[in-house]
Length: 266
Image (cartoon, rainbow, N blue to C red; front, top):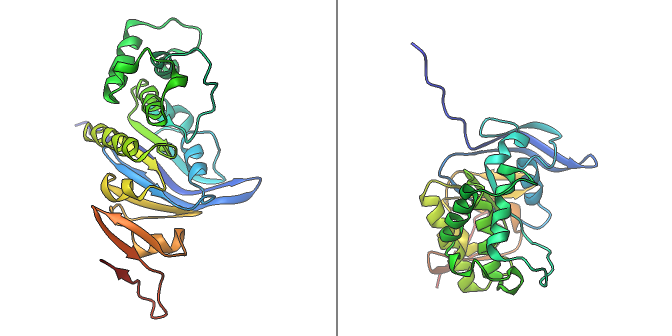
């Protein structure tokens, strides 16, 4: 009797080392992303978070180790990935409207120079509805607020109908209400079984929205749980860190001479 093949993980990283000009940036990284995961990745600037995303997207070849997207090499598997970059340089006066920006997300499926179809337009409509931005579809992109622009960029990624959404600091230039709105959008997408990898410095996202947390500073600490452990804090932030966890503030202090992590609650 034929056996049914197991579905491969969304992403699988085994023993990954990555470097620029032979200078290691990532060391022995191991991570598996499964369907329905919502992983928040924290860590200091220069710790290798953006490098990890480049390797996942097939933009940087590993020094050694193995990376698979949906069981395939990244250059093939990335067609099922939606990516939202950390920043976007653009001319605010350029005459492009919101729905046209989102429609660019269909290029990965159609290729440049080919006419858009009714199916493409339907995907754009769905993506804008998913981020609650259909009502601004005809607005010039350059007139949008920071939060609105990020919604549109997420919609552009969703227009490709991905199974994995990767976001690199999507709320860096967004006001607090806009951040909360974006996280609610991501939560709803994840409830629909969209796998999400979110690179962030925002502890609100870590404490309230993601399902699990990893910390990357050349090496990765990841336990598949939501808690930010002392090991993660030691790796990423050698100074005291203040967290807001589920609406209750508490302060995680530096390690005392006794070696015990101290917590202080109001």
